[in-house]
Length: 474
Image 1 (cartoon, rainbow, N blue to C red):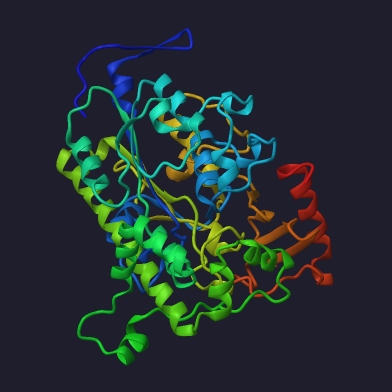
Image 2: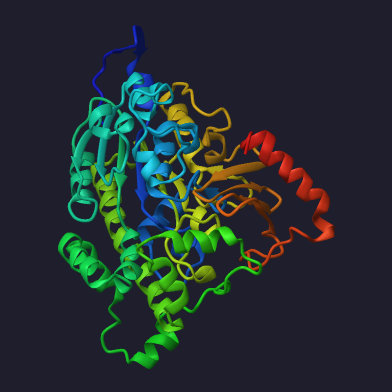
């Protein structure tokens, strides 16, 4: 970034903000790379032996990787609303006055509602004098639409030209620091496997007509390696079934109801009709689609190196939610099991963030923490959910007091996760149901300890935390 020697004067909401060239140079460019539907385990740096993600690993290895980062809601649009606002999706109401908990509600937040009038990421960064750039998938309501909030939109193509467009921008000379969101669609195309497999003839024709690119990439991901026999493929190449392949013992009735009420029936179809081989092929294709996304990340990292601005740029990498990928005989997302709600979260700023850090302790809320973190590096204060925190001290390896629990919302349930590994889910789609998991004893959530006398005291504590600290009135 080549900065002329001058003072920068920014007017925002009637207030003048003055930045000297020294202050300007000390504030990094910020690139936020966001994939879609990538679980925390879906990187080779996370220990997954069935895929290779060298670009994602590069960010993690040259900075910090968190193993306990969670979304605010494991569905596309609600999660993205949180990323742009630093608030839970449930903070907002749709046009019918209902609390936002799913895609339809998030896209229906009125732009003139009192809740939507609060500041968002774009407004704060404009206040700080940042140029705003956005590329790829949007799926956002009008009040945080990139076109309407001041972003220069490079492209809405999240599968093809996005990476090269972002790379071209990075290589340009810039007078101001910039904030760039690179919103990649994959490995989201894994969704189309079950959708296509259980589509009736009419819907299948619609899929083939309207989603040709998605289905082509999925078919490419489903291809077996050349020169490898089917027997050898399943013995040595294809991922095995997950350790928690069977539904959770005494699974909440809300999950069954949720699966069956979808009129497209693919969720129930996959759970009831997929063979073990089909589930393994799902996992194979999911890994290949993740590698496709990684190749796009590499283009961006190469541009940073070639432009000579790697040491002037903070790179943050995450995903908007995960995918069940066969765990509990589920695919897609929505439910609050770990595979759906826990996502990759890494950050790199050469020379500023110590390399090689793996944080296994601190609970990160991607949706609540991104905005205060970005604002911290931009040198401003952002008003959002007070439970969100700047991650900068953790990035830089400093010891600070941190949250001991974290809330998550969903369409059929809400949850609280504690730093000691206890996880409490309260379902409301089929009446009141609750489940207490212990991720230390049972990391794959194969069972629950709700009725275990040994957990009675802790169950009462986490219920109180749910009701008083995270979801008052629910």
